[in-house]
Image (cartoon, rainbow, N blue to C red; front, top):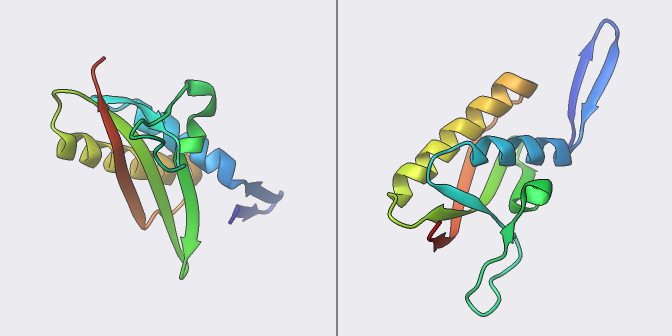
Length: 118
């Protein structure tokens, strides 16, 4: 799924990796988020905390029935309200992708993979 923007000068194609990187960067700006987690399944109950250079690996961009869906796999800070952090991440990612790319995001799903002390 690539985003295609066409104007009088030509066409611009934006890859899913770029969308994932923007979504991951927007999520990292939210209070209470320790980092992005790997999309792969948990190994022995331990999640892999991803660094800034590969945070897009914690984001999945997909299109289903004409809808754009973003799945985020996150690790939250201990002592924060998980529902508030997740809601803030949803709002921030949706807003950032719509304003930056003009992409109409239908769903932002947040999967909390762990809680860590900072």
